[in-house]
Length: 349
Image (cartoon, rainbow, N blue to C red; front, side, top):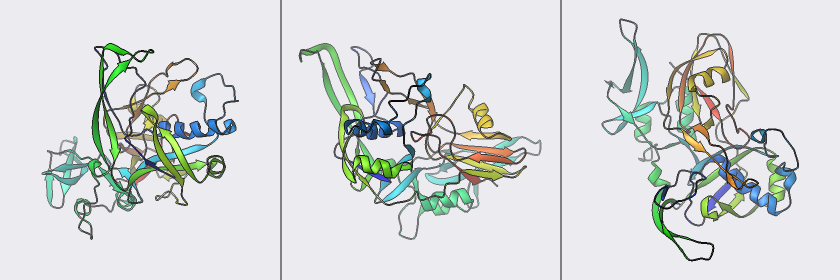
C-alpha cells in the first residue's frame, strides 16, 4: 500500500481550459483513482521505467491501454484508518442515520421505508460521510444497525464527515499570456481541498507492487492533481482491510447488494443494463446513486482533453436478485487497472 500525504492544497477538475467570460469557476472534486495512478506513472517516466507504463506497446484502441501495474483503489485515510464512502442506501431522518428496507403493499407495489429501531418513515434524505472498514464489514454482513452508526464505545460517531478529512479553500487568479502579461477578461476562481491533520490518501496496489516499489523507492515526493502540487508518498506493509474475493457465488433466488467501493466507469447508456450485463443471471431491483462523475484526462500526444467517460460514484449501492446461480467478479466496468470498478457484495434481507 502507498500512503500519500499532500504538502499543500489539492485541485482536481475536468481537463477543460478556463476561458474569458465563461468556465471561470472551478470546484475541486475529490481525488479520482486514475489521477493518482497518473502521478505514479510520472515518477516512473522520470526514472526511465517505461516498461511499467507500457508505453512501448502499440494497440489499435488507445482506450484499451493499461499500465504494467494495477491499482485496487484509492481511499481517504484518517489516523491510519482507510475510509469508505457511506453506502447510499444508508439515509437519515431527523438528523440521525437510518437504513432503507424494501416493503410491499397489499396491492403488491414495492416501496422504501427508512428504519431506525422502532421508527419507520417514508420521509428521509441522503447522508454524507465515510465509514471505517469494521463498520462497512458489518453493513455487508447485514448486522449493522442505525444505532451502530450513531455512537461507538469511544463516544465518537462512526460516520466520519467529509469536513473531518478536508476543508475547501477558495483562491482567485488572473490569466496570463505567454509574455507573462495579464490576459484581458480572464479572472478565475478555484476551490481546492486541504486535508486535515492526520488525513491522507491510501492507494492499494493489486499487481506488481514490489516492482513498483523498487522503481519508485520506499518513499519520496510526487506531483498530484492540477497545478502539480507536491505530496509525499511512502510504501507501507498494510493489506486491504476487507477481504476481496476474485468471484462471489450467489445462489438462485437470493437477493444481494453490490456496494461500489470505488467509482465504476459504466459502459453504454443504461445503468440497469450495464449491471445486468456485468452480473449475468441477476436482475436489478433498485439503484442508489448520485450524479455521475466525469472521468477525463489530458492527451499528451494530441495536446487536448481525452474523451469524457462517466463513472458512478463510490458509495453507490445496487440491489439485485439472482435469477439463477451467479458469479460476481470483484471489479466491473472500464479502467479497472487504474483503480476503478471495485465492488463488494453484501446481504440483502
